[in-house]
Each structure stands twice: as structure tokens, then as C-alpha cells.
Amino acid sequence: MPDWLLMILLLVFIVHLLVFGRLAISRQQKYYWLVSAVFAALVASFGLRLTAPDWMLGPVAAYRLFRYLAWLLAVVTLPWLAVRLWTRSRRNS
View 1 (cartoon, rainbow, N blue to C red):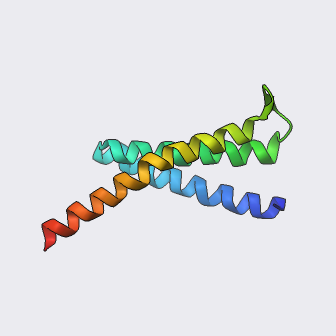
View 2 (view 1 turned 45 degrees about the vertical axis):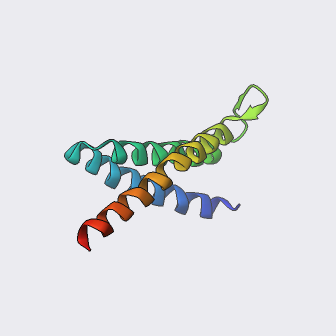
């Protein structure tokens, strides 16, 4: 992936982290804290990939570990989002 694309994605993830971090603080809901953690892991991953791609933690590049963490958190967050949307649509019906 070219560096210019990594920088754009990093900026997108930073904006999302700021927005969801603000929601987490203002609404005090666990869901927003978890989404913020996903974007924090993505910011760390893409930031490390741009600034220190050779930094290793054991046999794995550090940026990859943060990416795996983001995937793990997303596996929890996405079904939670689906349940929230389904619950909201049932309440509005």
C-alpha cells in the first residue's frame, strides 16, 4: 500500500477516533468505548506502519499486532451494532 494512502487512512481513523471518543465521554456507553478502542488500534497500526514498519514484537511486526487487535475488537463491535440497530428498529415499529 502506498504511503499516501496510508496517510489518508490514518487521518480518517484519527477523525473517527476523535468523534467516537467524544461520544464515549459524553454518553458514557460501553459501545462507544469499544468502537473508540477499534479506532485507537487502527491509528496505532497505521501510525506504526508509517513511522516504524520494521519494529518487531517477537516474530511479528508491531503494526500487524495492532491490526489483529482491531479485527478482534471489530468482531465484537459489529454484532453489537447489529443488535443495537435491530433493537432500535423494533422500538420504532
